[in-house]
Structures are given as C-alpha cells and as structure tokens.
Image (cartoon, rainbow over the protein chains, first blue to last red):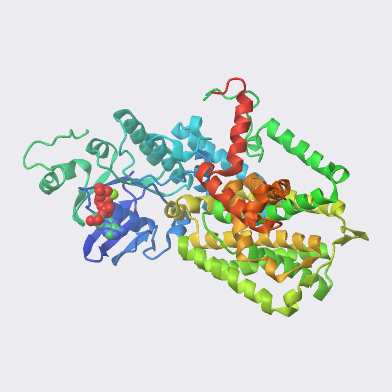
Length: 268
Length: 355
Ligand SMILES: Nc1ncnc2c1ncn2[C@@H]1O[C@H](COP(=O)(O)OP(=O)(O)OP(=O)(O)O)[C@@H](O)[C@H]1O
Ligand SMILES: [Mg+2]
C-alpha cells in the first residue's frame, strides 16, 4: 500500500504569478501505491500544485522528482510517456469527438503509426494497431460502465458522464501516477460513491498511485492513505486522515470551525 | 426523435466498427456512385466532363484546407498560392528534368508540402487573427515569387504544361483525364479518412478541441499544428498539379487571394471538419457560376438586364454569388452541406416515422 519508496517528490516548490504567491516552499512525497489527497480552502494552491506536477506550470523555485528523475522543466507532453496522467477541475474533454475517440487519444503515446502509415491504414499496420488498442480501450469502458455512450459526442453528455469519460481517458494512458482534480465535484451521493469505488479499484487492482484533490471530506477520509493540507499556498500539515482531521489549524482553516467536534466521522 | 436505432446498424466486431462508411447502405451508395461516375465519360459531353474534372482537382485541395481549418482548427488565407505552387512545380519538374508527368504530380505535392511546412512554422506559436495574417503573408510572398521567378513559372507569359502519358497512352482528352482525376480523388479522400481514424488525425482534432488537455495526453502541440500545414499543402499541391496538366497552361495571375477565399468558401459551404463535405463544397463552387451564367442568359436582353447593366459581365455576378453563398451558409447552415445531407439521410432512414 503506502509503504514503498516515493514515486513523486516535491522539493520546496514555490510558484508566483506576478505578485501573487500561489505556492510557497511546499515539500511533500507521494509513495508508490498510495492514495494521496490534497485538501484546502478555495485558492489554496491545490490546482497549481497539480499543474506543476503535470507540467502546465513551471515552479518559480524548487524541484519535482518523479520515479527517481528530475522533471521540473520537462515539457508537459513528455510526461504522458513517463507515466503521469490527469483529469481537470473544469471539464477538458475533446467536445466534438466521440467518447471512444476521446479515450483513444489517451493511447496517443502508446501508438506508433504516424500520419503516413495512418493514411495507408491497411498496409503499414495501422489497422492492426488500432484494433489492438481498441480492445484495451473497451476494457476501460467496461470497467467504468460507460458502454452505452461510447459513440456519443463527448460535448453533449451530462456533467457526471463527462467526468467519467475524462477519467477513462486519463486511465487509457496507463499512468503510474494519476492526478485527479476534484473528481467528484458536482456529483450526487450515489455518483460520488461510485467514483470513490472506481478510484479505489484503480489504486488496488490496476496498481495506480493516486494524487487527488477533493473537497468532499467524507470521501477524502474514506479512501485516502495520506492527506496533505494546503492553506494560502503553504503546507499546513500532512499525515493519515484521522491525524490531519484533529489538527487544530486544519479545523480552523479548512473546516471553518473553532472548537466544535469534527463534523465528519473518522472511518475505522 | 426516434431513440431506437433503425435496423441494419449493428456492428459485431471492432474491425467492422472502424470502417469509414459504417452502414451497409452508405457503402453500397458509395460503390454505386463510383460505378456511375465510371460511365460518366460515355454519356456526358466534354464541357460537363471538364466541370467534373474541376470539381475533382479543387476538391482535393479543399480537402487539404479542411484538414487544416476544419479538423485542426487553424486558418489559412493563402491556400490558392500553394495550389499554384503545385501546378508550377509539376510543370517545371517535367520540363526541366523530363520526369514523367504522373511522377511529377506526387513530387510536386511533396515540394508544396515542404514549402507549406516552412510557412506553417509560425502556427506553432500563432493563433487566430495573427495566424491568419501570417498565412496572408504566405499568399503574397508566393504570388510575388510566381511573378518574378521566370525560370519556374514562365513569368507573365505563363507556363505550358503537358498531359500525363503512361506506356504510350496520353491522358490528353477530357474523357481519359477524368479517370485519372477520379483515381486521385479516391486515393486522396480515402487517405484523409484513414488519417482521421488513426493516431495523428485524432491528435489534430484533439489540439483543435482542447489543446491544454491534448498536451497532457502526450500530444506535441507545435508538431501537430505545423504538420497540418504540411498535409494541407500536400493536398493543395496535388490538386494544383492535376489542374495544371488538365488545362495545359498555367498563368501567374490565377492564384490570387480571391481564389484562396474561394477555397475557404468551399470548406465552409461543404462543412468544416467533414471529409465528404470538401467534395460537396467544391462541387457547389464549380456549379455556382454555371447557375449564375444560365440565370444571366435567361435575363439577357430583358428589361432587368438593361436596368442593372449587367450585360456579359458574369465575373462580377459570380463573385457576388460566391460571397452571398458563404454568408448565407454561415448564417443558416454553419455546418455546411455535409450536415444537411446527413439530416436528409436520417429523415429517409426513419421514414415514415420521422418527427
Ligand atoms: N494562471 C494563473 N495566473 C494568475 N494567478 C493564478 C493562475 N493560476 C492560479 N492563480 C492563483 O493562484 C492561487 C491558487 O489557485 P489554485 O487554482 O491553485 O487554487 P485551488 O486550491 O485549486 O482552488 P479551488 O479549490 O478553488 O480549485 C489563486 O489565488 C489563483 O488566483
Ligand atoms: Mg482547483
């Protein structure tokens, strides 16, 4: 579970946008095989941290190490191949493509056919490759239970379904580390439970390490091995869910209470 | 709308599911259409065959532009210049090096693609209006080059070209050239359809729809933005070369910005992001002046003619008709003829249960 060497390490990472300090000297490590959650109030810098890991932002200071190598300045499109996949807080599907094609884009770095062999479909092996990957994609579709929409245009789907398709697309990359930015935002209780189960399956059965931002404390407490709390761009604390929850600063800053009993029950 | 799918649309293997024309009906219609076209030279007169040949050459170039604009979400207002480059390149290759014309055509395509890649390089950084201006520069630079490079284009007097010959058989009449163009159209359209169902084609669309998440999926944005210029230019070059060896004469003034706008008109009217739409758009653009002409003939000499003083000035009417068509399509049918066609097909598929 969460007792292996770190797969991801942030080393005193700071990020500034002009005068705004989005992150200040944040260090943490995500261990191989764990579900690592990041919580914190709005604007705390959670998404910014994820963007740094996925390569969208470069930290102003500090380093990011992945799988033993430094990736601080690696271009984002190179990170799919080394095993980092992610979903976005605000949906980021390819709206005019079918669900199937969206997920097939996730296979991009695993496919070999270029435009020439693609154009020659029958000759250069493109067809064989497409069909082989199609089979894998169908496995993911079955796993997420979205068979009925595979031909639908992604942009026309409901919010909850789009979230699922985005997850499917990220899973299709076969990442070692899966970054999820509020995977359950806007979902009802039932959908949330379903998503939580899916994330646990990905972690336990598919062997993916998960780094997740989530506001729903029930879910976070339920499925995380460890939790990091950000506040105003700084790391408040980090630890097992039940440890974090009783941290006085966390209760004040994040749960917005002074001395009331923890609203959320801690799972055994 | 009917929710239950009509019969005959169930695919049982992934292979069957990846075909370009998914239903039995659409494939049958395609083969039937091709068969009918094969008989066209036997029944149609030269003039009509010439029009069909024009549709073919233009549709290849329009398809290229559609890959750039429709599928990749970029813009080019210099497409006609690349069409012209292909025309001159093929003619020049044949005359200068004695390469058989049929070989010159693909080589001219590759040459045009290389130039397209160079002019497309700014696309890696520019978007929208800035990119449009950059491609406008390509239009003017190439036009200027055509006017000056006498060795390449023949200068103001233009360049004479020759017909393709295979084993003593010359494609020097409309009847035979038609088959050549048809073969090129089929190959180029199938290649584009294949492209769009494989890795690089999906990458182009992904970059168009959401470039940030495309990048996270491992797609190199600069590479694909530039690549689509290369592919578009390749198609333009092939179309231009076919055009040159059909007309047997290429003039420097032909490939101006108005022509580029017409290409944009074809892809807008045909349907952005639709492969068959490129063909429909080209057909529309070729048919339009014919319709305008017959309209003008009908009113010629009449009171209306005298009032508007149109006389024989059809070119003026033609430009107006093209402009009006583009505007009308943008307003009423922004997804183009391809979508209208789909709706009609859907209507008949469900008939009599539509609505
Ligand atoms: N591209 C940017 N340019 C300028 N400021 C930015 C940019 N991205 C983030 N910020 C700022 O950085 C801070 C942290 O934002 P971030 O999106 O990381 O917060 P968050 O913790 O994900 O919040 P939320 O819970 O609302 O998603 C905010 O003050 C935000 O305005
Ligand atoms: Mg956020």
